[in-house]
Length: 390
Ligand code: PMP
Image (cartoon, helix red, strand yellow):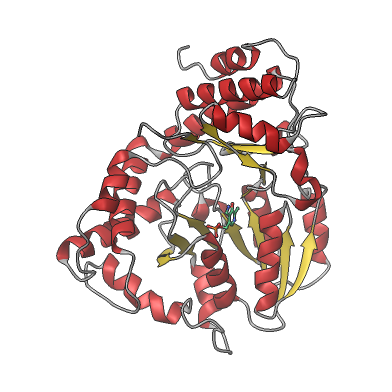
């Protein structure tokens, strides 16, 4: 891992060496006993990572957008009403997907960096008869975290299926799918799950499965149709072979390794580590005088940070300097404020040392752009906020 820049974008992240070596192992048959065992174990481990003993895991070759598409294709029938809790770019993508399958979509929105409050969501739920609602746990475009537990409780109260886009949260932010009453959670491999891009992961809860079984119209997406995949997932989980489409064999071996590492760390310890690392990063930005996109500290995710540029700083120049200092960061994504902020991902295998190196590179870049600040102030604040001794 020399000759590289430190990759600190909100996905893909840097991966553990053992996960990467699984990617480079000789590919086996998808019907080999070693593969059946690795896939079966992975499906079982997903129940623990999603905290969903009652769910049906589904793993497909594809990115997070396929996971969203798959949820939409299988749960929406033309004319269904859907509510989208909108916290940014990816919430809007979900609205577009649901519309594509014929849903009448109502968006409940907030200004950039904000999130709709519970009363707004309640009023929206009362305004119509919704089959489902989608919530983006962490919208990667704004770094806004939603209160999934409280929103899911509202969904339950109104008898609405609750679908959570956990692409930027699962295995990084606390999410107790069954206990919180979430009906479907989806994610992708390249973020806190810790596997190179290429896997779409879903956990389908019993109510979502029932809604699927009660469909009266065909699923308008052949590849993503659950009827094709459920027997395959059930076979592998029972340690039997199955085939519908060739699974991404090496990615699934890698998934098995990463999920073992995640469960080895333990979910509570992993969430706590993400909180500490996030606190360190945010403290560093604050000490340098940089604001953040989330409008309130309690709206801010722990898997990434979205600092605002100081006035007068040019984003392209800044990111160029950061890269020269050895770190890759991401620019803004939400069209309305795209040029006003940048994004730092800190998920999965990330360490406090990575965050300190990143804050240091940011200091270099700010200096390169002519911004005035006390050199070392960001690193010092990050170090204090992220310290691991009592
Ligand atoms: N939802 C969220 C919250 C995301 O962050 C992303 C990707 N950044 C997606 C959906 C789409 O995932 P992908 O890029 O893997 O298709």
